[in-house]
Length: 439
Picture 1: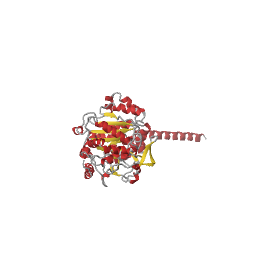
Picture 2: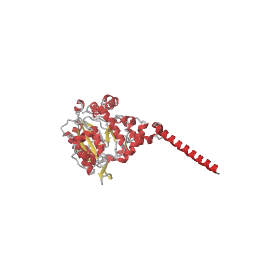
Picture 3: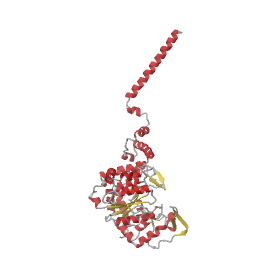
Picture 4: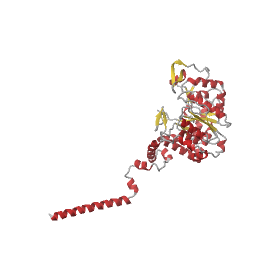
């Protein structure tokens, strides 16, 4: 019995020794093993998520659908969704010292190229909320020789209005529209806002060449220099989307519409009178376009043009009717009429609609329009339009910020002869020439 007891103690000690030795070996292996070998046991997405806060995205590779960048973008997307955008109140405090704000935000205050200075542009931005996004847009298009009219929705939160006015006060060539009223979706209010900005921009003393109306959810796909080159090629022609008015939308202009509780309604018992001038064709178009200065001066001074605008007040989405119709009127400077193919090559806006046969929205669909996500960057980088709509920093800041990063790279390293598809631009212009109205 004593012999067996001693044997058992020896066996226990031996097993304990072996266990300790194995533990020490594992510690040594862990300590001196190459980190890549250990990391290879961890899924790629988990490793990238752990590093995403300190690692920056390569936006060019992300636009090419690189797997590693897509995985990293997914992690950053999840983190940023939790943190949210910069609060509006930040801009009230940061603009107390305008010089510091302008410098830290990276606004281009030095004189632009001679070519750009000789071709000043006028912009309007219509906004309702999200000051951070509106400020990003303003910074992307801002140049000291251009002029800017900002229209703030009267229904915006007081902090939004205060923050945006604080930003505007830092720039001598940016001003708030004197029109102060609520925006109602699909109503006459966007047309009214544009008309007010047109008048104010004409009174600035800057002889700008084109007027571009924007909304706060857009972002440029082109630098100011690239935009100037394209507009110079247009040579006074407008870029206003237009098509024959589709039958399924005829209700927009045949019924009286009215506003009730901040929404637009159709009165099924009140038919609207047709526009009295039979030689004017009503077209369907887009809210946002590129208008020549001569066209703006003409429409504000032409009594038939102003009658058309007044007639549209109680229609549905008049901003998608009046500009296209005016562009097709006889004598409209830079105007043209449509044929079967011209509507396919407009230069103003890249918009991805639900059901597009050539591409699918990778972000979110709201009102049948794509809110771009970071997986849409490939589609966006292939577009030849001047601006893209829509973005939301609150929904996906990565798509917005990557597009901004790629744009600024071209601003600081300009090469418009290669960064723009001039063959596409010229085809669009040639179609306009064949259908251009006599001025």
